Structures are given as structure tokens and as C-alpha cells.
Image 1 (cartoon, rainbow, N blue to C red):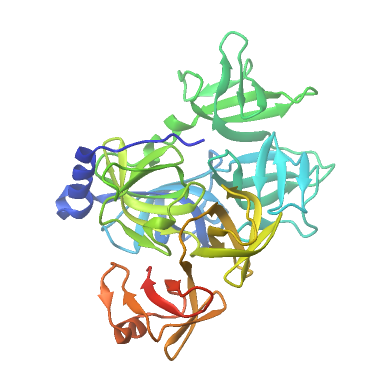
Image 2 (image 1 turned 120 degrees about the vertical axis):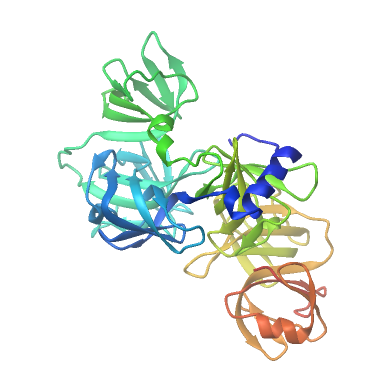
Length: 461
């Protein structure tokens, strides 16, 4: 579970100065980025969190702690980048790039029929979805394959895979060791053992790096080794990830982009700003933090987001939060409910193994559903909860605009009598709204009960 944090007003005030103040308040020459490679450009550049980093002669590139050339990097890999250039520039120069998987080893079990599908390596649960890239797998996945998995950890410590690559087939002898990352638990310095999740590790014969580093419960590590007959990983190497990644972490007043799953979300005392964590980074929003592909109300534990901002002491202050998927929100009476879905407002939303079901849907009762639309067009619920709000609401990307109507998630909404707001919550005229909104824009409407006629429409981005 994520650590819940609260950020004081003094820190927020400093963050305002750093993020929105003069250019001299932020180191303009250095930027850090952490996330998945979204564009594979071979040895010339990598794109992470929408920022392109050029690979030049002096760029240091590593893959799983091995020095490589840029063309070894692939789309979907998790990378950390230290770069430089002008703040706001779309292209920067990479000084160093570190790509590293989350787990590597033999698939022990699979649930291909699950929703979403999943498999297990070294007692680590890995979930795949429509965004996962599968490489070197012409015949698909199978138990016994030796695979490399890149991805993010969510609040429940599951791995959400961004890339799965086959390294050795079933029965083939691997020439690489098993490895995985996580935080140390049940540390025993005498017996030289610890665990990561439910995976037991014996490090009595392991080399700990960097040289002189110590181990203790809670420390983030990467472990390499081989499973013995009892299922214990006999480690040959243990790396302190916090020390090895230090060069890629933003320092005070440095700009960075961080991608991952939100955890530990809490509202601050002002009722306007929020605090949360991504990958153990303490993050704070400000009253004027910008939200893309969603609104501040879409922030929730378990949501995949990208945060751009500036490090302010121990807190990363968010200038912009971008949701990795367009956020959908439905509020209304359930018209159908089953173990794997709920229907409301004429739409059916899938409930899967990762959905946070605060309340079990009951036909006739009112519910709020938050989630996203995947690449195949399916609506996936990330949270389902009961609501006392008597008004129906629908939020999603606009499919089409016709006259005084917009189509959202396939539903055509009549806006002829609606009032309108822009993404800054400022009122706008009907002409301004229809002159601004475009297909793909995220719009939220409030519907008259039992109809597809809206009395309010708001552009969310």
C-alpha cells in the first residue's frame, strides 16, 4: 500500500515559487524523466513522457546494468533519463539513459482467461492489458518460458506490464539469471535472508552493490540469482536501487517528469490541493496545477498518471498532471449488474480483477463509476461506489459534434438548452463551446433524469 502524506502550506508556497515563479528559480539546464519509452527511434533518440531525448556520442546508455548502444532500447521499456536543454523544449539531449526491467525469469503460472490476463514469475503477479507490448513471441505465452517484463508497480504491488519479451523458450537453457525488484521485507542479517513480497531470498553468497552498501527492511533493491528446489532465490547479486538511481533522481529545484500509479491519495486541509505518491515519490498538487485528459476529480489511487513539475526539498510539486488514458465517469442508476460488469446510462462497463469495488452494484441503486476506455473501445471500471447524487453525469472523450449535440462514448447528448464552462471552470457561451470543442476532447455533461438531454456541459481539457 502507498504511504499517505500531507503537505504543509509552507511547502506548497515554496512549490508555487519554484514552479510558477521566475525562470531563474528552476535549474533550466537539467531535467529528469522516468517512464515507458513510447516511441522507438533506434540509436538516435528515445521519447519518454512526451519528451524526446537525443542520443549523442557522449550519452551513457545501459540496459539492466550492462553498457549498450542506443539501438538496443525498445518501445515499452522502463527507462530513467538524465538530460539537459531549455525548459519547455520538445527535444533535449540525453546525458545518461538507464533501462531496467521489473522482473525476469520463468513463467510459473498463467491466467490467460482472467480479466485482465495475468501470470506469475518469482511469486510476482504480472497483469497485461491493451497497452502491453509483446516481443519475440510468435506463438504466444506459455508456462515455462523465460521472459523479461518491464512495467510499473501499483498500490497492491502488482506489476502492470508495459513490455513482455521472450528470452528463452520452454526447455531451452537460459544464459541469464532470474532477477526482480522490490522493497526488502523480513530482513534477517544473521541468516542472510529476506523476502520481496512472498518470494524468499538468500543472499549469503551475493555481492552487494554499490560496494559498502548495507541492507535493511524497506530498502529498494534488485536481486539476481537462481531458484533452488525449495523455491528460494539463491542470490548472486543484490543492488541498492536507491543508490544506483540517485543520479537520475531530481535534486532540489530541478525539473522532472514522473510516470506511474497513484497511491496514498489524500486531500490537503485547504480542500483544493492533494498529496499522493508515485513510486515512493511524495507529490503535491497546487491550486493552479493543470490536468490533462481528465480533471482533478479524476485523481484516485490506482490511476496511471504522468506528473511534470519541480523538486522542492523532499516533495515533488506538480505543475501538470496528465492521465495516461482519457478518464470516463458515469453517475446514474444501475440498470443491470453482474459479477463482471455494471450498466448505467445505457452503457456497460467492465469490472475486472483490478477494479476497486467500494460497493457491489445493485439494479435500481445509484452508483458512480470511474475508469477509462481502452484501445479496443471497452469501458473499464477502476472504481465503483454508491452515490447519493440524484443527477446523472457522463464524462468521456467526444466522438463527434453535430449541430447542438455531442456524442460521448457513443451516446448523442442534446446541448441545446445547456450552460457551458471551459477547462478553467469559467462560463462560456454556446458559440464559444462549439467553437472550441473538438473530437477527442474530454467533456463532462449533467443529464436531465432519464434522458440524453444535458443542462450543463464542461470541457475538462
